[in-house]
Image (cartoon, rainbow, N blue to C red):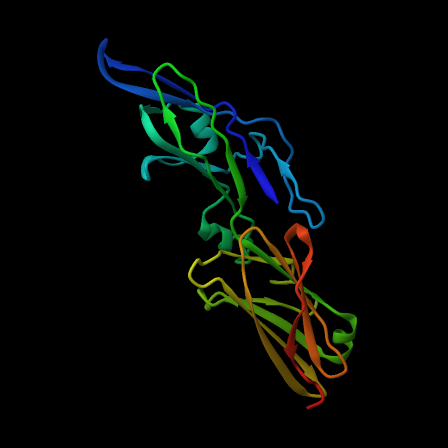
Length: 262
């Protein structure tokens, strides 16, 4: 699901900047406004693109770069909108927008994280006496993970939990209880995507007739996807992890060997 941050009114008005009426340097001004919209949601069955209101985007941060060099440090959207910033004319400009930092994306909500949206505009040029409209499309930059237990699994095992952590950051372990909750109240956890090692380690454990059984499955995470891990068991003790991914509801059954009868 995409979230459209429409910088519809970015007017890049190039003019001669002066000091005491003396020409100093040709430069441009960025005027930023947003189109009206409703607050976007992650949906399981439909793929949507929605615009943001100023209220929706009030916590977004904006950054302006030119050829990869920062021309404006990360600035709150409303501050950006209500302040006049001047930029030298030239090509290779881009605008980035993010709903929160990567750190906050994992530390919010008592450490289970939150959705993080990020986007970068196409390169544009600041020109003298011309206006350029720039649009940033923000997509979900992290992955969402939730747990559901099959009824048969719940009957076979007791005291069961699922621990999830990324291989890139193994010290951050999120534990889902037997109700599918983490930290007792949250239905899902969020993980940043490490480009070199995007694997998520999922460990299921439960007790059967006094014996603790465990099984581990590794899943490769991708940004902008919601992984619904459906924990099941069969008579042979196999646990099927059926994964519903993002709004495509793509099922990816995966077996994890856990035999309660051994």
